[in-house]
Length: 307
Image 1 (cartoon, rainbow, N blue to C red):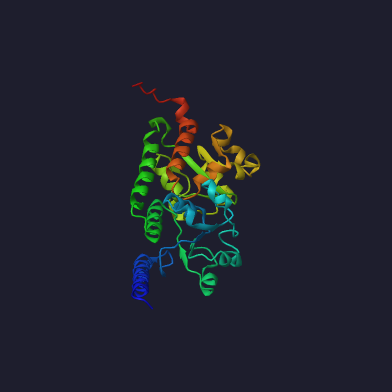
Image 2: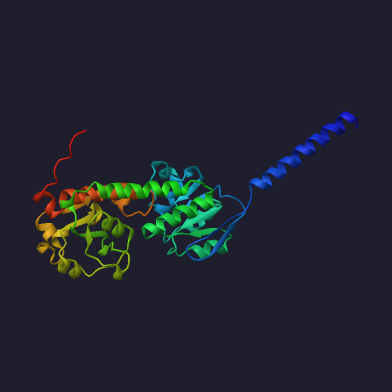
């Protein structure tokens, strides 16, 4: 072997060593404690992610890493790009085989999902995060930011929080104080004062008829709603069929005076997801209160002066 060949081999070997060292530096371990209290360690920042909770899907995308998603649950539909991804079933009953086939570095799921242990038994890393309040949304935003090494996750949360505050400031004083029933799903399941929707309503100056003591999303006896007799009802179009025929509901003030906000499916999805679109959801609630609160039309707020 000539001296020139030996030098070339040394150069190649040296380059390989530099690459190996660079890769070892780049592929450092990432550790996160999830909502189960479990410390999850990944050998590197995840590049292949399966999300089986819509709010977590939206959070990954808001943090700028939609391209790392390789699979989602059947309800994840925003942003539009995720609709092209393989679907792995529902969040509570996903298809484990389909998830494993996608070779994810990590699966993001709700704490209430029943498949975490099965996935972990198959060697799949799982991070369980389930936001239910405004504080939870902030915490989960920062946790996923930590997982994906996004340095400005706190800035994104501040923008969301500021948007909710702006929605609150947009409401005239006459639209405040309305007693609101927010139905999350048929059952009926409601959003109480302690849910993230309930917290938004409080910030908007509304009064939730469902107390925090019942839990964030209680299933109610329909008679409870009749007795509470809310001023305004907020409900998704998908759950609104037959409102007038529910026992006792003909007597509800909100139905008699047509103070019901029916949200189409895309808006309803936004409203019930504790994630990056909370400020937009707050604006929808604010608009509802401005148009449906009993005092809003009886004593309209004065028109704002033009600049």
